[in-house]
Image (cartoon, rainbow, N blue to C red; front, side, top):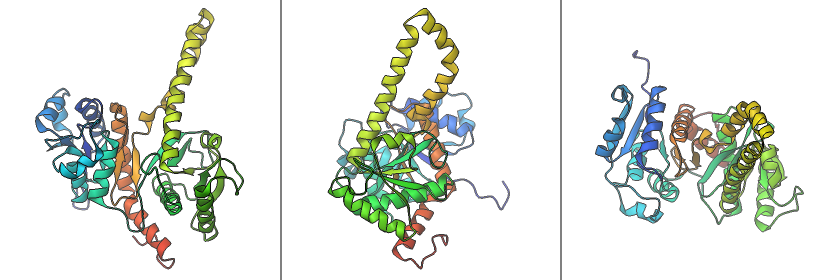
Length: 355
């Protein structure tokens, strides 16, 4: 390393969280480390050393174990975070707070992960409530990405109109910084495309988003319906966390059912089996695109740090991709840019590029 080079800050992984404990977390971390990423494995030291011992050459990889003797299980309460300082998710978040890690990634208890990040990292100034931001596969949309960004998908079941307006701005900055989309379009999920359609919440949010668009702070498309999400009508879809979580679970469940139908159809006859051999490579590509593991984990956007929350059933591929996604956001200085944009929104004379 030359004198001008700055060593990369590692990503902290809650390495014992999730339905399957340390095994997929360590496997994913090893895969990420082999691609050059530094990872802090947070959890019970003895258990993590034993798991790492299954991988030849792991001792030479940029992996470090940070001892955390406690873990919040998937069936425990998120409120337990406050009283369990040495729980792995709390230790991992403190590493980010103290500057020892660039981001925290957890496949463990989602409620505990949100609470730990909120309590430890705090909120960005100007954000009332953080939201969970995720990607869903879609047709090639306005930016040609092949995915749509949706928020909130579970952090806030009860919301106020200004929350959604804030999330639209945060998501727009996220796509500009991380995905290099300069004018991402925002759609408000409603029951009709017309401006006057929707409940009291969506009508108020629509007015706020329209005002932001007229002020040049947002590229607001207008209302969209459920069918528009996967059609890629807009780059971003904003909704409350109750509705967003239903959309997310519905999408994942429907994908599994559809692939099951296709599999059954291809196995139902000799002709179907022959056809299956021909389309198998193409179907693998479609399956990979629809697999949640491809996207790794979802970003808790609005906290004063990078926090990624994945599925409890995540496999090693999801863990690896989540770690790489978190590192990319850190390298692009996402939190600094979000903070600058929030300051600019509060003070039009501020320059969001100053940070």
